[in-house]
Image 1 (tube, rainbow, N blue to C red):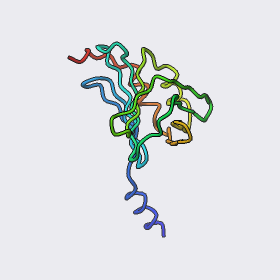
Image 2: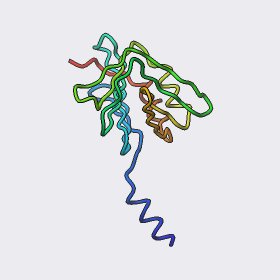
Image 3: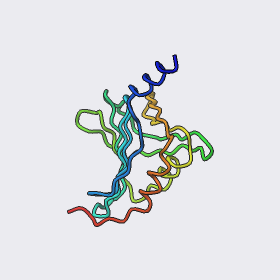
Image 4: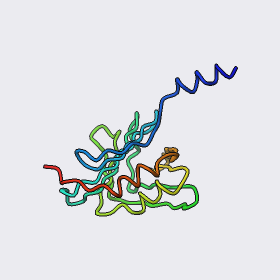
Length: 142
């Protein structure tokens, strides 16, 4: 029985939070329901960006939010989000992302909110990637 459980766990897709500093500072996290990509590119007018991609289109809404549940619970929102042409990627860009980074680093669960659509994601293991992202100092992209 223990062997069967171990094999099932090995077969499950990994959903690690990953950080890379090239070509720009980037955090990625993928699950079957959601792929997150957070970037910092100082060459851009709004250097911080978060892109959330789903296998089905996002609901078209006037506002988008992120709810973080855990020790530093909070909900943040914006009306400055954009949808990709196919509607599957929702992107928000800004000049600062402290609330987003704090939410990722100090909580247990996040939920993307667009109208009636709620897409939860686990924050286990996000903190080291967020710390590396905050410390990242790269040259701007071309």
